[in-house]
Amino acid sequence: MIALMVAFFVISGISTYFTVSYFIKSEETVVVPDLVGEDIIYVLELLTNLGLNTKVKESEYSRDFAKNNIIFQNPKPGGVIKKGRDVRIIISKGTKTLSMPNLKGLNLQQAQLIIDKNGLFEGNSTKTFHDTVKKNMIISQYPIPGEKINRGVSSNLLISLGKRPLELIMPDLGGLFLDEAVLDAEKNHLVIDSIKTIYQKNKTANIILNQDPPPGYHVLENHLINLEVNRKTDREHQHTRLGEQKNTLFRYQLPPGYLKQHMRLELRTFNTTFILYDELMTPEKKIWVIVPGYSVSVIFLYKNDELVLSRIFD
Picture (cartoon, rainbow, N blue to C red):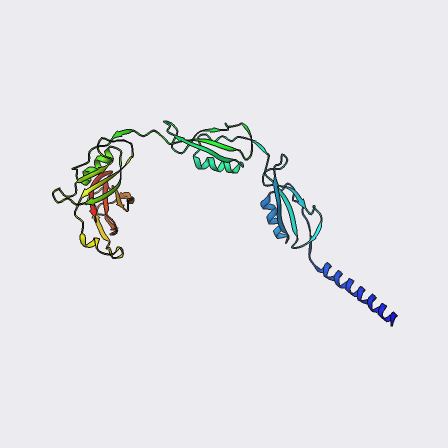
């Protein structure tokens, strides 16, 4: 009995050994490639194709390896491992020091891309008017171009606001018809922000009753102004629900002729200006615009940059 039991255990052990060996040998294995010095994108693609997993252990500054190249790997090159196993890598962040890139003369978006690409941070940004440097262009920087710096430092920028706008005195638009007021505002390099309608029975329709800023006020070029126009509104619309307001169709046909005209149509509604047409148009072309009925809207039609028609919809 003892001999039989010993024989049983010996046979079982041998059988188990050969079974495990068979399954181990049957699993697919690959030779680990040399990854050091290679770009991370190439490494990710290579290991994926080999059926291996990429594990980024960390990233370090390196004088010997370019940014995003592999500094270290584990397992070592030439090792045989099974598919599905992990390969751990360390990625280079490039040299710790670099020469400060020259950002002067670039626009802000380009400068931000270069700052990010070089592992820097955008520091304090100051804006000022400048007679020769266009708006959103970099006037100067600190650290200065070419200075040796460490990655991770902040770059302070001085950004141009463009030419200083002209200082103007707000004209008196009161008593003018709406189209006259718009022309006067544009002539004085001012921008109409909103147009509201109120009604005074003893005043002429469609004239300006109030303005903001008031006449004589010191403003800068392209300052936004608000106007109140004397116009009777439809009281029935004011008592309907918002969803029941009806839209209005605006139609205009260019006069006959032989030459194309530059037409620009602006719709000002919800305190916003929408440019619906701005193009050369052939004679007798028709312009169709749906004007929303949920708010006071104003149509301005320009021909060759001259206002030829204005209409209020309320």
